[in-house]
Image 1 (cartoon, rainbow, N blue to C red):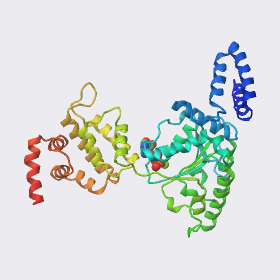
Image 2: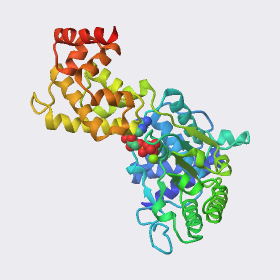
Image 3: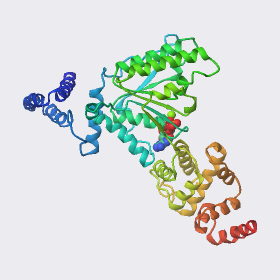
Image 4: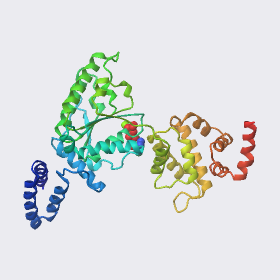
Length: 412
Ligand SMILES: Nc1ncnc2c1ncn2[C@@H]1O[C@H](COP(=O)(O)OP(=O)(O)O)[C@@H](O)[C@H]1O
Ligand SMILES: [Mg+2]
């Protein structure tokens, strides 16, 4: 039924150009289609509802997203990527320069970011929906976003989420193919990658962007870097209006300033704040539900961690729970607070040794140290005696006897 997509596209174009006449003809088509293919007739009706509307957002989130995606597609020139589209390759090695994640494979789950940032990102997407209004006042939707921030804060996840929201395939540059040790080849590969991205409707995603966008005054390899960055600048300019480009880097200070300036949106993705960290812990823990003490302890222990660290930690915790969690009930982890608290502490202790780098240094020292020091630290960090007992596997009175005494001693 390939022709029908063409019908829909023509319909959308017509609705944009001459709405009243297009509506008339599309209604005729719809009337005819109802007799032979009601499903297609319904598609026409839906398309007429969403396409070419010169008015603000539609009510439901789904409609809104469809409209954003429709609008993006309508406004982007280019062919449709398919599984059989050949990838561009490095001429010398044959290595692919990109890989494609198709819309149906892209996760619909947004990264968890602070509210203000998340709203700004949704605005970025809404610009596509209101592209017509923007154009009328001489503006265009944002098409180039640079994401920067520490490793593991969700930049890659966000880039793919943007592609998902636009319902466009995400063409991800592959550095292993792109960067070559042969003189001039990296620049040529960049050109080929952009040719490919410009030919098809897609989001071009340049992850680890610093690898190809390093400052041109870099003392080493000057000639080659210059060539690469100049090609990159030309390629970005050439792509203008041909599609969405997202770049991401953990090393924004290495970027060439001219490249930096090419992006309309330069979005700093911060480490999660306490509130977001709590939501991430809950999310990664699913389907398990964190008990209050567990959550409080995890919040304390994960101070300063990135989203990726939290995910790794919770995954390790789940594995530990299955391997060592005693007191199972029907194959599910126990609800016994004391057992769970103690198991969680053991799991974190294990990670403190296996994955030390993710912990903030004072937390690491306490987790790797003895119970008394940890217990006292918890008591002074607003954990109650009961909570501290649950984590250390001690009764409340034992906590009060053993730890308070020491605390007073060390305190006084
Ligand atoms: N803010 C976040 N919200 C949800 N998940 C996150 C977040 N940050 C990191 N993660 C998790 O960590 C993984 C790695 O994050 P990624 O997007 O690759 O980070 P970056 O590209 O910034 O290094 C993601 O796949 C996701 O599971
Ligand atoms: Mg990344």
